[in-house]
Structure formats: structure tokens, C-alpha cells
Amino acid sequence: MTGNGMTRAIDHHPVRLRRSVLSVPADNQRALAKVRDLAADAVIFDLEDAVSPDRKDEARDALVRHLAGNRPQAETIIRVNAAGSDFGEADLAAALAARPDAILLPKVESPADIQRVLDWLSERDAPEELRLWAMIETPRGVVNGPAIAETGRTFGGRLDCFVVGLNDLRKETGVPALPGRNYLVPWLMQILLAARGSGLDVIDAVFNDFRDPEGFDTECRQGRDMGYDGKMLIHPAQIDAANRYFGLEEAAIEEALSIIEAFSLPENAGKGVINLHGRMVERLHLEQAMKIAAKAEIIEKRKARS
Image (cartoon, rainbow, N blue to C red; front, side, top):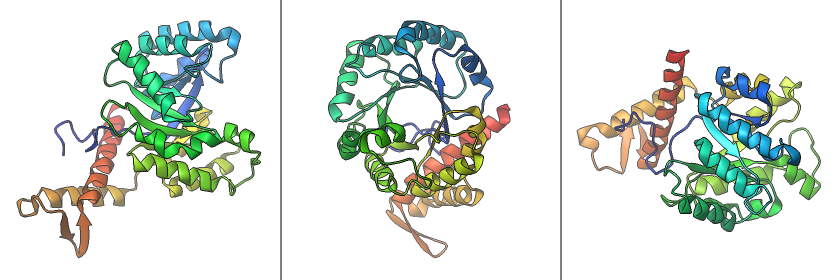
């Protein structure tokens, strides 16, 4: 167990539960009011696609006021417009004032898109704990995924998470929205590999029809089996299923705790590989086990509060 209760990974990326990531329009007062009572692990307050151009100013002001007095227990992310757009800098300023856990950048296509915002935040002495997320939703974003993810490998990089945007990717490639996402799976795996190569979390794309729970369940199982950490959601009705499908199995938690305990034994100090119940276990398995244990601890704390 780490000194802070195993809530931080061995690298500089904080360990977070991101099974369910609900997107909420920043100008929808009814939706904002309900967020505190929801079981979503993370909430994206959207200033980009969900807000029409003529309501951007109103949405920014409303969101800053709302978060000042109604901050949810969930991880808080603000999706801004692109830095080079007419709304990007005003969105970033509002996000900085609202003090979210992370800022989600749309349509990231190159490391320069990340660096531009890093420079902007540095010039304004943004707190070190403020993280960045990146939407990967264009062909260039997919192709440049490894280079984009690499910006998260340094301690000053801030980049923590990729979010897949399949609606835009479908539009730009002409791939239809077919059940099973067969023609999209190679790109989904490509994005996942890019994220994992730099130690980032990665969130699966939205399922557009919240009235189709069976279709949503199928896509959650697929995303989980591909290795995704969670799913971006468009409706609160999807939260419980996402938490269930992307949750931790009891057997995985027990195995993680046994690995941590084994490596903590004096006779295993400094060893890179140990024998655990007839199976060879390496330090890389310890790192994974610590993350699982940290997430399990977060879940237990939430249960205690509810």
C-alpha cells in the first residue's frame, strides 16, 4: 500500500475510476442540477458540441457558477472548444476559473494541439494537479495517437486520458454505424495501444441510442474485452450498466492483493520476479495489482458514503 492509500499509480498518473463518464451539456440547468445525485465515476461538462454558438457565453458563466457551489463527488472534466477556435481561449479561461480535475480537448490531431494548451496553462500558473484529456475523433488523431500519447509521459505533460469520438470519426471516414462496430475495431485497438504505450487511461465512445439497453450492454462488453477503462455516456440511464461491465471482479481484486502482499515480504525485497503459488509473477504485475487495489479501495469508500 502506498502512503496515500494506493490512490496514485507508480507513475505520475493518478489512479481514477473511469467506468462511467457521463457527458452533460453545460447550458442545461436541469441536467446540471441532477449530477450530484448520480453514480457516474466522472462527469464531462460540455462547452463544445452540446452548446450552440449563440449560447457559449451563457454556458460558460452558468458552469462556473454551478461548480462553485455544486461540485460533484465524481471526477470533474470540462470539454472546451478547440484552442484555435473563436471560443477556445474563453473556454479555457472559464475552465481554469471553475477548477475541474481535467480539461478535455476536442479533435486532437497532433502533439502540438496538446502543447499549445500546456503552454497556455503554464503562462497562467495553472495548478499542477489540473490534468488534460484528449478526444481522438479524426483520422489524423488516430494515426498520430502514439505521438499524442507520448506528451503524457513527462511529469509536466498533464495528459492522462484518451476519449474515443466515433461519431466524428465515422463522419470523416464514411464508415457506417453498423452493429458490432466491425470496421471500427482496428482503430479502437490502435487508439488503445497508443494510450497504453504511454500509461494513459482510455474511454470508449458513446452509444447513441439510450433507449436500446441490449445494444448498449453488447457494446460495453466489447469495450471491456478490448481493454477500455470505461465508456462515455449520453444519458444517466446508462450509468449502472457501465459501472457493472467495467467494474472489478472479486477474483481480480483478491489476486491483486495477494501479489502486493507477496512482494512486500522481506525475502522478496528487490526481486524482479517471484514464485506465487506456482506462477511466475513480475514487477509489472505488481504495478497492475496496485492500480486494481487502488480502484477497489475507491469503490469501497464510495459504498461507505452511500
